[in-house]
Length: 401
Image (cartoon, rainbow, N blue to C red; front, top):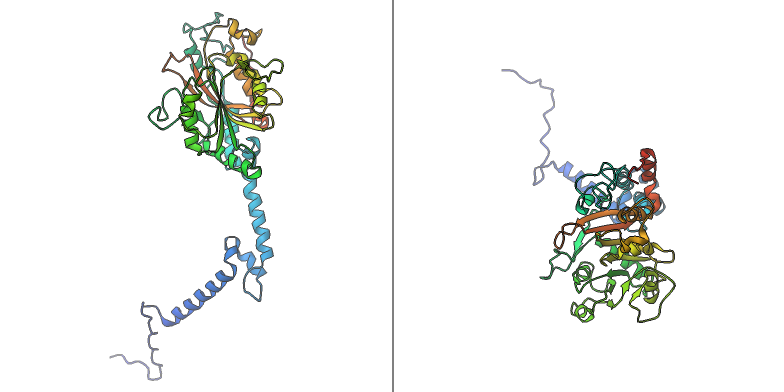
């Protein structure tokens, strides 16, 4: 039997256990650490998010917490860095986008820069029935032309097809329209009202309703009663029908839009130019009309250049139904020396003015797709710098003119 040396000290007794099986010494240390942590939290919990090891060098010896000066300076830098992360989108969208990072905004810029407006860039009138030049395809009709030209070149993450959710449309059918991120309109309206209680918040022009108010009703359902002011224009007598929709702050104007000539703000006219309309309604002091929705059965070809006249509020979004038709008298005012169709000048004009296309929808309920619903969004021209560079590098020469 092996014996232990007589002079060896006896083994120490095992440490007493706490009720949960931890050594009491460790538990005591844990309690001390916990109490210290609680003390630190209670003295500096308002600044806990920014507290780092560097802050430990700035401890207040009396309170044991970090000094306010060091934390405030760091918070200020963090806030500035957060703001800078969204500065490109915020600036180039006139405040519409305030939460898209600079990196993601550059992806959108690149998407627009690389976009091709035409399947046949040297012969963009291919498929158009009014052109019979060399190389023309056998498919000579407007739906084929729209299928090969001017697809959307921008993406709104939360775009939504807006129409009343009741039985009259449930957001489907011919009346509703695609709106870019409607929640942003609501935010901007609240910001404007906070700055100026007399501001209407948001303003929506709806030209050509034919007695269908599902879009306006849907917008109010989406944004909330009282958020927007609605101005509805139509030649028909639909005012009483509009009132039955119970749309708050909705106004019916029984006149149509025509080309802007000499100023005419005398009441009772059958047609007014857009600039006269804005002045009649007292909107010439506004910076922006949030949504300009127009379905005027071909008048768009005559008046689209008036939409961007100087002195008008900026049209932040344009929702327009484009109608097909021959180049006759309806389009004569827009006939260019190099084009026998009004469509190409129309799209090029809006793009040059800073509009991107975020949605395109053929109307196939009442025709063969010859009418197209387009949705445009206004951006600052700086957004298109890469686009202009790309177009210069492509150096496309048209041969169908």
